[in-house]
Length: 584
Image 1 (cartoon, one colour):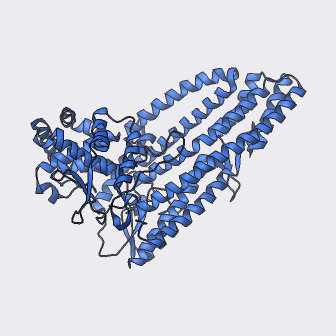
Image 2 (tube, helix red, strand yellow; image 1 turned 60 degrees about the vertical axis):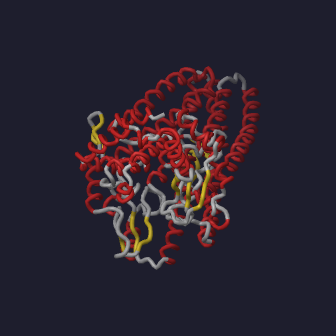
Image 3 (cartoon, helix red, strand yellow; image 1 turned 30 degrees about the vertical axis):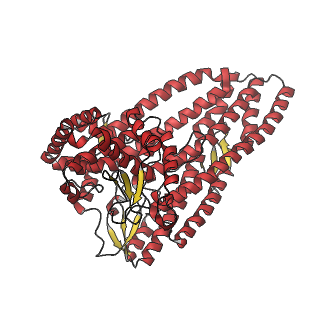
């Protein structure tokens, strides 16, 4: 049990989204006041405007911070609890719950410090407390315009240039440097989350009598961590290694985590060959418009484009508040934003990288940020159980119904069945202590069976599991993929394609991140492809129809949840995708 690289990526994106509103609102108010200063013609009028603007700024800042703090307190609690549950089930362990609770409180305090030190850039590019910037920039504009040195348009453009280039910032108390609010909030939350998950894992290490650690592995690793990922270390070796690294493993400053192991007992999750292949693929990277990028360098270039897009959006927000004074900037910025978005999509596609929204969806967090700014994190199945581990069916159905409301882009042909199984003909649930998996649909009983004691039950995303099992129910009641000759033939052809080029498809399997698609690859190869997720070889051998039913259920789930990795299915196995669509 641990946070995956996809989940760490998604958490970072989600934190940026949570803190976007506070910076935009303050930036807009600053620019509005600056634009008004450019319209003043007398000193008396300006002094009145300045006093009014500064008093209004107090209200705007206080109101914005109050609302953002309310959102932040809720967001911190949900994010930290979600990460803790992903690391270890808290329900039955009071000491682990206490660790999580303590870190929620500490993280709230850290984030409050971020919001308590707001600043912005003045005309000269130097950063001052935000209230001072209201006065300094307004004074500059009035002085330049009233003296005839600059036109109102020139003065306002000059005064707002550094504002939107650098954004609303916060002052780091440790060294006085300034960073964007979004970055500092992200850094504070992820750092404390890393400390919390490390503390939970250390307790597991000590309680379980472990004597070593295994570091996770992922593609596109940074050069400073790549030599060490995917390997096992004794306690002493791990401590020595981490003390030498500038970016320590487990701090979530990267996507690596470490979990406790018993040396000589727990087998590594990655072989030396697989780790070497990851390193080769990283170095191979991509050549884009004549320039070569390693996979890691491509991720950094993508982040630079994302920062440019955020900056351009800030410029548009500023120009909108400048009214007629910013009309030319507004047009040119909107054109630039379209160009940046197009380039971002082109580069991401060429490098095989997920876009920011796709990273959220891949982490299961695409629906987490609601329009009102509040969070609704995915529900681990362990949080939907009552006393004795039994599933609280009423709460589970209520939670899943709310989840369906968020699937605004899901195909109607899928939603019809999911709504039917939630409202018109609710799917039943039955506890089965003999079940090896957390969930399974029983056609004989027409129920979803579950085992709260099965490995992975507590942290499994209930919405994902419920969608998958209801896809099986729809298949049994209507589609009957296992009897459809066209679908069966397409599955057979796709499987033959994989078996003829196992080496090539193994590389593809290593690059896909979608768990449902990993299971599709496992099914098509009868378990011969190593995907680090999915059913076992024995499962596929037990009943040939399982191949068809699982592929159908995984494709149904991916399509419903907008999984970007469907691209691989549509590109590599177009006949399979076409036959899947014909089943509805």
